[in-house]
Amino acid sequence: MAVSSSIITRNMADFADETGNVYESVAIISKRANQISVKIKEELNSKLAEFATTVDNLEEIFENREQIEISKYYERMPKPTNLAIEEFLEGKVFFRRPDAEEETSGL
Image 1 (cartoon, helix red, strand yellow):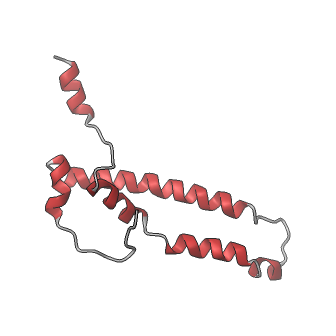
Image 2: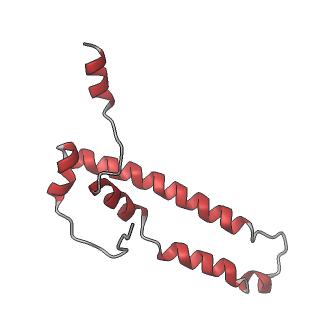
């Protein structure tokens, strides 16, 4: 999925297409962005854990090119919010309404 890392003007009506409510859509996108953020942070931490040292040698810390390249890669990635918006608009985000489930199960 090619997601632009730059700012894009969005039509708010597009957000309401799926749920019928812009605010509900934004809440869903926000929760998905948090999930993506946690996943990316875990990936980054696991990759950087390989470079963890107990040595306090500053020269060694600043000279680690691989670690710098990994960090730069993650900095250039699209933000979790952009990823979540694209997923939502493409219909790739699953969500449910607990209150609607209670109403249907009570009948």
